[in-house]
Amino acid sequence: MKNEPAYEIPLRYRKMENLHIVFWLLKDIAWCMIWRPLGIAMIFPTLIISIIIAWRTRQYMSELCHNLAITLWISANSYWMVSEFLHFDSRIIWGEISFKHLALIPFISGILLLSFYYLIWKPKHHNELETM
Image 1 (cartoon, rainbow, N blue to C red):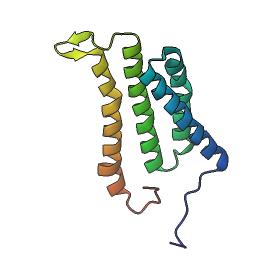
Image 2: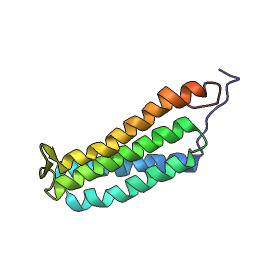
Image 3: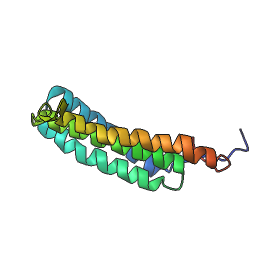
Image 4: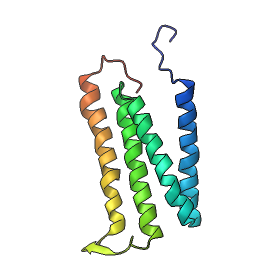
C-alpha cells in the first residue's frame, strides 16, 4: 500500500465537489417540498459543477465515466422534477409512456456508459492506472 500511486484531489476541487453536494441536496429538498423556484434554480449550479468535475477528471477513464454518469443522473432527475413541477409528467406520449418516462433516456445512458467502462474498457486496459 505504501508504494501504490495515490489519486489526490486538489483542495480547491474538493471544495467545489462538497459545494456540489449542497446544491444537489437543496435541489432535491426543494423537489420534495414543491418549492419550484428553488428547485429549478438549483439545477444549474448542480449540473454545471458536475460537468466541471467530469472535465477535470478526464485523464482517468474510471473517473470520467462515473462523473459523466452522475451528470446524466442529475439531468434525468432534474427533468423529472421539472416535469412534475410543471404538471406534464403524467401526459401520455404514446401508449402507456408519459413525459416522465423520458427521464429514462439519461438514466439508461448513464447505465450504458458504466456498462461500457466495466465490461469493455476496463478489461482491455487492466494494466492502466485507474481509480476504480
